[in-house]
Length: 529
Image 1 (cartoon, rainbow, N blue to C red):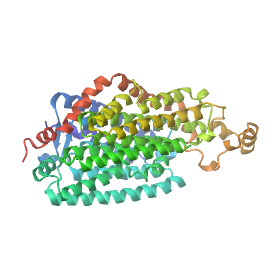
Image 2: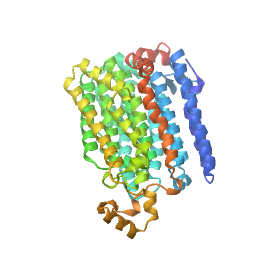
Image 3: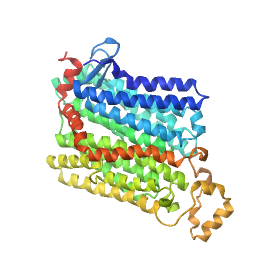
Image 4: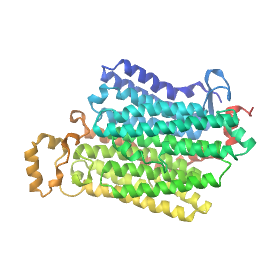
């Protein structure tokens, strides 16, 4: 069904970003415009999910050109759920940024770049054309380049160079893959591609092209090819890392799920098995990194990597349970990983460092943050009745049905190590001896603080590099407001877990379209051409 309102999730943040650019010298105006935009998009996203449930897949042929001749936006239940989750994350992270990002970054277009990034994410989820997917990827990535370097610290500059380089390479591969695919099929509309590939069979050159797309999207998602991710995601402030962890890797995963269920779904042998092994390897390497590091940001980043692997494993099972589990866990993972980084930002802001060896006793100062982190760790491991349980259970069921018993057991073991890594943050960061909060340290001279550290018998409490100790501007650091923003995601983790049966009805509908490409094709092409 054609629906002009489908463009609004992209149009609202785009208009907001343009207005914010013209209001460069009025930070308060930028905040108000941003807040209105993200709240409006939540309303649009709720309407979109309800409309798809009642009336089926919604489409919008841009310029009145019907598919496959023109660019079309498509909202099935999978895309609608991702748009809704993105809208909630965008709103929470924006309000968190109001209290943490600092005036210096606000003056240099933080808010417009934030909105442009959302434009790219929404467009990636809603587009029905592969070339338009590339365009939306680039809008998202260009915005992320600016956000990751905003602030200009030495670490940010170094990691930005690596981040830009790897994404330029992956984007080049993306364009090349599109050219090969268009040369082989004569179209880039996803529904039309599904028809064409089904007609000729996924053999020979099409299998090679599918493998190229897997490399491209795996680079962007951080599935196995994640060597660029830990350093890049640990460099910017916590609120930026939260939006990256919650959205950017999931756009790459969405692209894998969409293309390998709609276009390249004929080879469930080699390619799906390869995706399964890539997912398992990603989980193993991710949890190894999470256990090995003693830095809060690095531990959480490697947990992001492990989560990507689990979702990829769910897709690779190629059965209903695995597909439903991948979708359910992906929605949970978007919310939970953003929550973890927001909580980490409060910890780092209070302790003045991200190193676990230099923080302890925070439970008396920021108790709500500590207990939310504890519950979030349980949700990460899939402990019932929290949000991670249903998705993980379905993925395990899918793995067993596929006959991948060893890989399924590995995924369960990886979940336990994820839990261990978060519990270690909780134990080392929130318990033990009280240490002065970071803002208290700022009020102490180096000599007095050094004397205090020596008396406590902890000379390691002084950071090696005090110039890069804090990433926050303390005049705008408001722990209570930060906890309030993070609490929204925390409540969602509990509500989704307790209402998993209700959420499952939407997830099952999303999975049914992925498993039956004919439904998508019928909605977009109206019977085919």
